[in-house]
Length: 420
Image 1 (cartoon, rainbow, N blue to C red):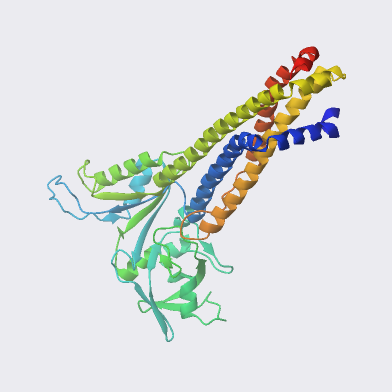
Image 2: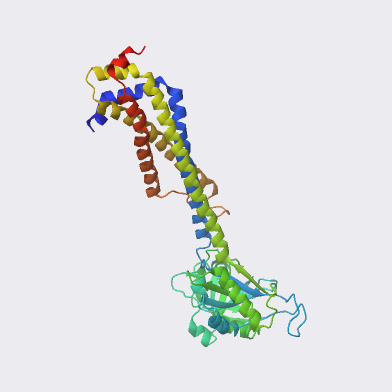
């Protein structure tokens, strides 16, 4: 330890570096590239993870949208091309027969899928907006951020078929005055007055989300638009530990049985499985992180081995110098420590420069792609991972330094002094 703080030790190290600048640079390059690749790829994959988490933070990961189409095969006396209509009663059967379901929300809408949007008015102001008929359970799958003083649809609204609504930020700006509190106010939807009970903050993430969406109770929607028990689609979330792909298969198979559809008809019941997409995205990200670890560690090891080889050459070139030191009383331990410290300095210096350059690269990636349309946010590498990589470099630097150090110790002073 005393030798580590000895000025002569550091002078000899930097003298050796200055004497062979190009060789030292090329030696350190392997370690630098290894740690740079690890920091860069790990941080990039983390940025991808963060981006998709932020993009879909308003909806459950194990969620899916299930909808109906026309049949593509004849079955049970029905012809091909029969339209399938999902029903409110399907919910009870799905809950009973598909235990993976954590929450299921039947939904209806006016304003998407080719339907006319709802005409909404307040005084002399008016606009056309998408109107959704929803149950409170929808917020278990896709939580809605409601501004202070407001709320979302509740069970009492459903049971009593209340004429209440939750409006979007843009709807508020276009229908209400700037200094007017919309909570408790009224808007007219299809010439029927609805009381505003909440204003939702637009966060995006869902496939149909808009900052002007209006939500009303499902039971009120079916009276307003005379939809009966028809359902446009189901928004469903499986339990966290459930196989979301298998859950989708079970849900579609159950709906085929309910609506008398050929069990092999893949077109009659469709689904958009967000859980499956998440699984693929995070699988790719985890694979990228693992690849960065393998490539980075392999490159670091190769670089450290290169440092060991260069130090072996250095020891050979300094044979006479080492012999003089031994003849003047330097112990084997002092000679060994000198070489090990030199190996450690080169390894750590290259590693720290690689970490700094990797951090600047991640900062550049975050500035270039963060906040845009591409889901990429805050590319970083956790501090424990960085410290672990530094620890790995210290251990490898010491181990690889032992080889030239032992070679230096094995030199006999009398033999060294004969060297020309």
